[in-house]
Image (cartoon, rainbow, N blue to C red):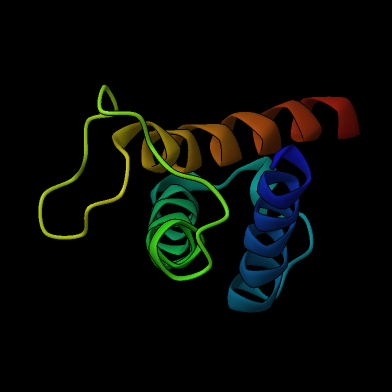
Length: 97
């Protein structure tokens, strides 16, 4: 699953590169860059999580997992995809300097 999350972050990077027409867009993302990360992360993770749980049945949630009403996917995977891409890209930007 970690590899999949890493690929999603890489996909967010590529989408930002295309959207902003700049490979270093993540170094100073500003509000537009953070919004792109959040929206792209949500658009990818919610359907993907739903497909993996209810369609492919690759994993399931315990009864303790809080679900987002209306989409029935876990709060923590969605929160993870909202928090990790900005954090990871920030670390990469610091490393890149």
